[in-house]
Image (cartoon, rainbow, N blue to C red; front, side, top):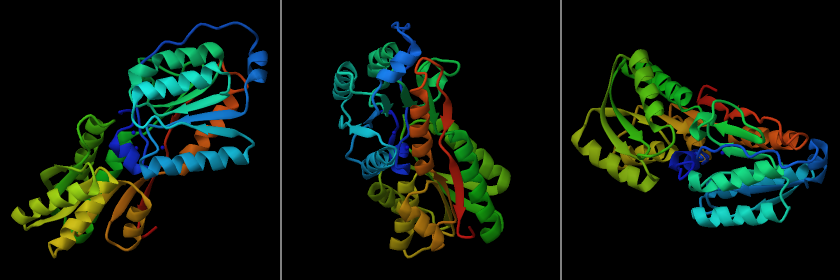
Length: 326
């Protein structure tokens, strides 16, 4: 559900996805006709346009959307812009113009490029679900025909820092040198997430200090960079990871160095991370519940078909702290 390019890497990875931003836009005027007539004319066809189908997480999400929507009697058209904003705009314009879409779920490659698409959909009375908060689009709240769905990065960062602080207090007497494996610049929610995580860590374990940061773009790169850090910091034994790549890369780096990370916390919660939590290699994961988000997103779009000119909702991707203790 990760990213951001619209939803940056963390969203993709964490979902891996999806999370994500669009450009601000204004809603188009009513194109005429009764709401009931517009709703009746809309087919039970969902257009799902992610960033790309190349990332396994987004490919998996597309399969999940097809399965869930299909069980509700809907057809799903999955598009693959392959990270090309022009291609994404073209694909969406074609299906909207052809009258094939009854609703659309869009994870934008380049938010500004989708403003005409959003206006077209609003004018036609076709409900959309887009990732991000209303203010990220220049709005102050819900908009006609648009539901916003976002990841609460501040809440996620706070939970991540609290869990690492709890681990350091429990296993390391409250004192630790911490490595922060962070997302790349430009990622959605990066600043608010990292500030919330650092503040929560300091509050939970005042004796813990972040002594090094690395950018975790992918697992292999994170493992290499963290391995290099470990050579010069023999006392480092705790990791605050902003994404799954950072957490898994850290575990690999410590293992390669013949060391054990006493406390690792993760934001994302993919299957491998959750297994590592169960095995005790990761203390806790703030796991994004994308299955639940997929369900609420689709169900919301279905409900919006009944009155596609009414204001949509503002949804939040559910999060859950997962530890070995349950």
